[in-house]
Image 1: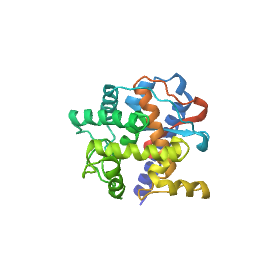
Image 2: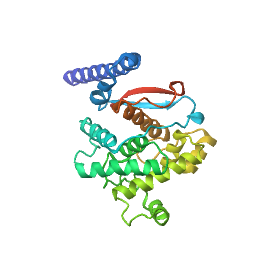
Image 3: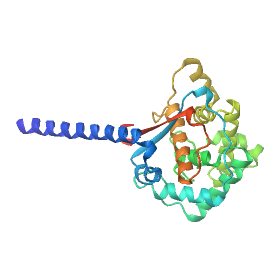
Image 4: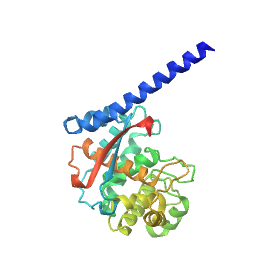
Length: 261
């Protein structure tokens, strides 16, 4: 009996210390962000530290002019994201060089065709599928950009898609087209465009009307989804040593220890 209570106390103390240590790590990163080596953050800490980017004003997150990028840069970015994700089991560690090159080429092709930042599309793909072309969600969404089969079939005649929604290029084409339309629908606001990609235009309208977040079957909220992708977008610019093209006074960067999320 006494031994059991002692073990319980020791375990509680250990858990409390881990929790305090985690909060300290998060606080230290927040406080020292301006003097930190960003490459260390991306390559070393990203497996355990999640970066999010939240617009200061959700209704006024500005559209921005994104840079011209080469296929080789996207290929390097994807390789870096996968190689540096030691503890991210959702990432597709078995992605072949050929498939990675195809993904990179299709991101460039359809991002510029539909006027969407290719680094945003890369961030969406990482969030949605971990660069796994064959993944399927519990809700039935498939492929790199997690397109619902019904939506894919709806877009098929308009975009000239194949019958296979997991096709790398066709999935990216459909997803990029759909995201571009959602961003346009919500006054070129990337934040609300991402929320609409996740929850539909009706979801955005409901959030704006009721002021409450929506959740999917995994318990992820619309805001968690959008700010996580925007955080990845920000990191993508850091990895490629590009200046983030959104005014600094329009967003805040936050860091969260992953197991606390």
